Amino acid sequence: MSYLVNDGIAQSNSLEEERSNAIVYWALAGLVCCVFSASVFGQWILSDIHFSTVPITAADEVSDAQILRIRIVEVLSSLVALAALGFYCLRPVLQGKSIPMEGLLLFGAIVSYVLDTSINYFDYYMAWNKHGINWGTWGAFFPGHTGPTNYAESLFWGVPMYLYFGVALASIQLFVVKHLRNVFNCGFMVALLCSFPVVFLFDLVAESTIIRTGAYSFPNTIGALTVWKGSQFQFPLYESFMVGIYVSMYSMLMHYRDANGLTIIERGLDRFSFGAKFPLRFFAACAFSMLCTGVYFGGFNLFAMFSDNLITLPEYMMYGR
Image (tube, rainbow, N blue to C red; front, side):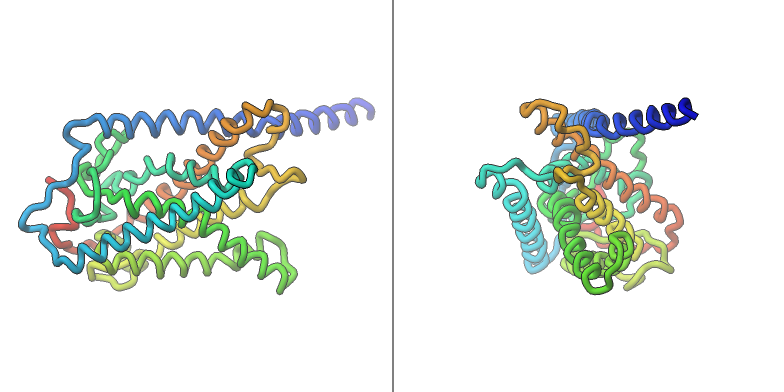
């Protein structure tokens, strides 16, 4: 009997030790993610061919009003992203505090932006307006990429989406979750599930509004799961579903903390010196953000495999040939 007890204690200690090393595992994974992101972006930036604005020809001409709408989207998106960075990163620093995990996840989301081109990994499932401020895309340097590699990724509203549809929207979801738990006296996971429609509708309204400006489009979707089907402004509902999963992953991380306020990816941080804590937390955040983004694009591409609703877009929404 004593052997069984001792064995149980040993297993418990082993599990506890593994949990305490979580920060190391996540940080190592994050370091790999950062190297991968830097490699792909670096090759793109140093390219004489691919790092350039997608050419606009006479066939791509649009009205000044439409260009103005796109610029408004770019400015507003950038301002929201800057506000998130200011709130979660700059404000704590000015107050003499360390940057919380929410702030580090914002930087992690930027690192994970390297995966954005994978939405067109196999085909042209998301179309970008050539009039958006862009320097092309890095698809030609993304491993295994077989889709188009010459389209106009708009960096001034594309990157910000990763910030306000990630941490910022997760903060809103957690607010809703807290309210639901207070009203219905339910557990976190039940409240999170009940809050999912809020995130879904938020994304549906927000993305549909941006699409109406002509900034981007979904040209090839599953018809049965598409609203405004057949028009340039059609929208696949599974996009909002995957965004909901993406946001909920951030919400769960931000909710589950120990007595010291550490998330599950920061477990074991107290074992390290002050100088090592920031890089460990930063790389861990990068790994988690890359995981969330990978789940989103993996799910979207699984849906995209069954696309049966292809529309003809204006030339200014097409990729360069």
